[in-house]
Structure formats: structure tokens, C-alpha cells
Image (cartoon, rainbow, N blue to C red; front, side, top):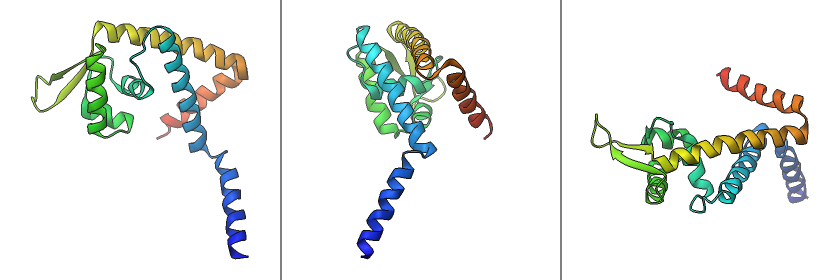
Length: 154
């Protein structure tokens, strides 16, 4: 009897979890990331995987260290370093020693990487318009403004 109650309670938690803010934000992030990745591949960026887009989205456009980028991306430095080496081999970024500290590795965009980022911004503008078309512009704008307000309220 106790097992049945625990299973019923756990099933209820699973149902509630689907409406949990964290789960919704993660699901939206996966959807947007997947849509961006699909569009980049359609534009010929076949070497880019979804993990690469996470790295690129968390790099400062002016360049940033592997440590800074890893922290922003929520990845370990080791994982980010491996992905950065893959992006370097594909010609999207350069990995160089910092001018201030040779132990620090800095990621900067190559011309190919800057072009990818320009395309990414175009893709995001198009996706945002598509998403607004699906749920309504007012609702989409309210979602974005709410997300911005929540982040600003730290």
C-alpha cells in the first residue's frame, strides 16, 4: 500500500514538474537551441553541433577566456576547452595565450566565426518573429520583457 501511495505521489510530482519554471526555461532553451542549430546547418555550417552553439553563445563578441566562457555556459573548463579546440579546428575561433597571463587561454572569433555570429543574429531575429507568430506578438513580447525583468531583479 505504501509503495502505491509513493508512486502516486511521485506521479503527481512529475505532472507538477512540467509546469515548474526551471523545467519550462530549460525546455524553451532546448527548443531555441535546436532551432538555431537546425538553421545554421541549413546555411552550410555542418561542423557545428548544439554544444558548439552553447560555447559560441557564451563567448564575448570581443573575445573571452576559456574560464569565463565556461562559467557563463555552465560547463567545466575541460569540456569547454575540448569544444573550443573543435571550433578552432573548424576555423570559427582562435585560441591564444592572454597578453597578460600566458596560462590563460583566450577565445576570439575568426572572420568565419564572425560571419557565423552575424548569421546567428539573423536567425534569432527570424525565429523570434516565427515564435511571435505562433503565440501572438503581445504574448511573446510579454514573455521577453518578463524574462528580462526577472534577470534584472537579481
